[in-house]
Image (spheres, rainbow, N blue to C red):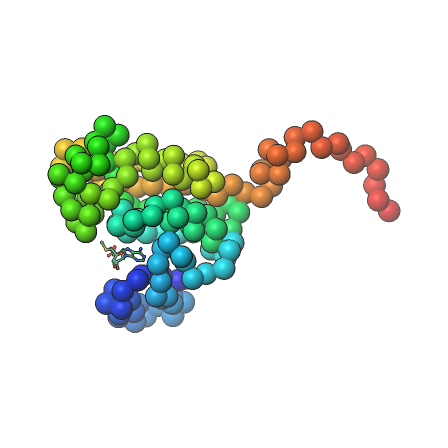
Length: 165
Ligand SMILES: C[S@@+](CC[C@H](N)C(=O)[O-])C[C@H]1O[C@@H](n2cnc3c(N)ncnc32)[C@H](O)[C@@H]1O
């Protein structure tokens, strides 16, 4: 299991929590979610709590999550999401970027961003509305599995009838 954060402070806290819990299969990396320091197709599941709304370049974050996940891999993200009819100015009026409000995507923007990065089975479920038009939400999605992608791309491939040996 591997955790990622860009600050020494959060990494130190995470390592202290790991050690207190006695977990021996967890390591932490310093880095950015816009440039995840892991190879392609090396991750089964990505979980994240209240980080993506802080990123400036969200399409790049979605592309990076998609790159590092193996085919069929999943994301489960807790994040702040805005109502579809809230403009960027409306969002900034309700809270700052570092307060996790101004950088929130709308439900529609979140779904479109994940879809454009190649995710499917996308669901965004609000769990709370701490202020009007601003929601806590659970975001789930899956990277298309290789088998289904091939079927979808090549539905007309001929069947091989002969056995080979
Ligand atoms: C609101 S805190 C959430 C921390 C943790 N996930 C939790 O639930 O306690 C946001 C964290 O995201 C990290 N962060 C923000 N932008 C980041 C980025 N672009 N790449 C990596 N980490 C980032 C910050 O350093 C901070 O530790």
